[in-house]
Image 1: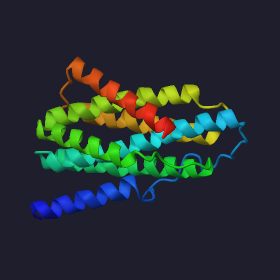
Image 2 (image 1 turned 180 degrees about the vertical axis):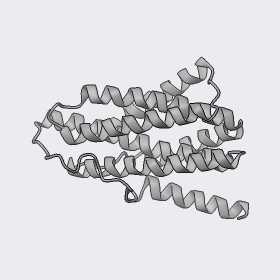
Image 3 (image 1 turned 30 degrees about the vertical axis):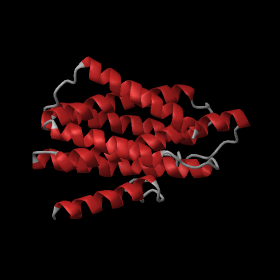
Length: 209
């Protein structure tokens, strides 16, 4: 494929991930066998906001991995990025379905999150495969901590959301370990701090918009 073809493919993927209904998942949702429990309005509002953040986070993950795969130098790392992105599709679908169940919708800012994350991922990939893997490890460690905070905050009776978030946390930890075992470089602390700050901005906005 030439450069124009690759650009068209990336644009098509961006539109499908950020605006279209989530693709089907390979795995059944962890919430599938769990009955939904009624929540009061405050509890439902909190659960909705948190699951909207998680959905936007998965949009970002798709974009990051796509950007890194586009600029990865080694075929093994490129394939690893593509495989991780395929697994993240499950999370995207689960979160989208849960938002439907909560009578809500994804963040209207998802196209913005996708564009920014793809750019960051492409830059990470261009820096070299060890740095790209380091970015994956650092990102997934931060996501793992963020999902734990959601488990601490989600209403106790929202067992369906909690099951989804718990499985996502396990998967993100595995992605981080895989990146580390593949030769990830350790990112400088200031860069990790910047990543955390930008993620907090996204979470604040996605909770509300």
